[in-house]
Amino acid sequence: MAYFYEEPSRTFGEYLLVPGYSSAENVPTAVSLKTPLVKYRKGEESCPLQMNIPMISAIMQSVSGDKLAIALARQGGVSFIYGSQSIENEAAMVRRVKSFKAGYVVSDSNLAPTATLHDVLELKARTGHSTIAITADGTPGGKLLGIVASRDYRVNHTPDDACVTTFMTPIEKLVTAPENTSLHDCNNIIWDNKINTLPLVDAEGNLKYIVFRKDYDSHKANVNELLDKNKSYVVGAGINTRDYAQRVPALVEAGVDVLCIDSSEGYSEWQSRTIGWIREHYGDTVKVGAGNVVDAEGFRFLAKAGADFVKIGIGGGSICITRETKGIGRGQATAVIEVAKARDEYFKETGIYVPICSDGGIVHDYHITLALAMGADFVMLGRYFARFDESPTNKVRINGQYMKEYWGEGSNRARNWQRYDLGGSTKLSFEEGVDSYVPYAGPLADGVQTTLYKVKSTMCNCGALSIPELQQKAKLTVVSSTSIVEGGSHDVVLKNATPSIMNG
Ligand code: IMP
Image (cartoon, rainbow, N blue to C red; front, side, top):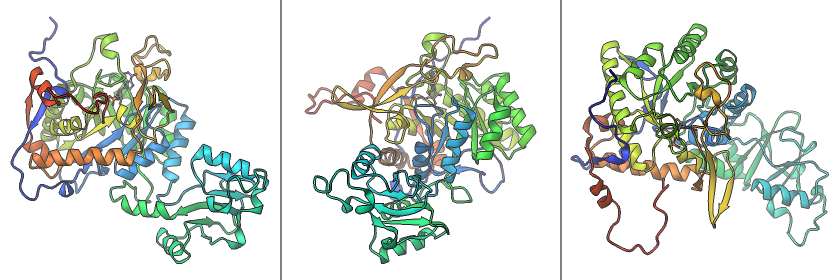
């Protein structure tokens, strides 16, 4: 006879945290959100790969490109570049993140000396950047001839067809520095010469990077940024259970720090085969997460198979229609609570701590705190990150409101059939995701910092200064449907009524 769970499965929206005692030391600035990303053994000094914030971005075309990966690593989290693209393109994205040096910018606005003011204005409108490098061949790495900044021309005054060479600051008058100049020295040169930009050139005079005064300042302000031992940003990448023998070596070659098998169903032989192949070829040097599962059995299976972390969640994603189409899944809160218990038991038995990630279904910022309190080591978010400037999708205006596009990996638009692969078909036979819009939310840094300030404040209310302390001290209660109504503003007429759905 089929197995019936005694309790219904629940979502985050059905829980609240009950405050505990908070001492004078419980202030948000004192809270650490450091958390392990991959497994470690009891007694080991520390986890080999930790994050400074408990957030990773979803393995999705509409979320995790290289720009978002850089922005998130700068805040202390990790992006997993989407795997539903060619191996070459995915590896190229990883390479772009790894070769990005915080503070050093590869110029994205370049023109050849034959260009005119008209070209300058057009490029500026397209990129939003006002510093343009004039290189011999118009490429980012060509011989540097000069720089055009806004102060070099007057719109409606300088003729539209004026050649850039007539108004740029020529190389003879520019302050430049050798390509290997340290960021600290670059900053001194910038201050000593009262300039805003410092081009770095190689021995032949080819442009390598530009250091901007404002970027140096923001680099220094990013105390949480997540760097590897070479001071490059940490980045992850999605893989599937089909082409791993080709994809994994290419991603490793590109310098990826951690992989994750991207699948709607993780409790499967395909995942253990994929992890097995990685262990056979790379031992423990290549880190790989697996999932998704929603119960203790699924967790134990993947932990035993050698996963470095395990992802939880089936059917809870904002763009997900798996529960409607296939009738499988589980309330995300219940799934996290059960898997967290299994993780702790596994740790007791084996001395191996396998971090767990709650993936999908985070609607309000406090859901992150709930997931952590319930035992998650970190959360994966799709919709949340899709809203920011740095996500790879278009920003569009709909009914006077700015939106970003956001579509599921199981939608016809993404056609990521490997994610739903059951070994036979090579095409998506039916959709498990939708194509949608989410309200535009500005730069990632602002959004993440606001969210995490809220998380830290709630942790303080629970008397916790770290995630493990929150997990020990948290008191959680299921709320009734009427108390959910009571929790929002009620029985008042709001002056500025804005849609209450889809906030961060
Ligand atoms: P969100 O943060 O609620 O938007 O959920 C994001 C998560 O939904 C991802 O990390 C995936 O686990 C899952 N997901 C992505 N695309 C699809 C889809 O097309 N169908 C079902 N789940 C999806």
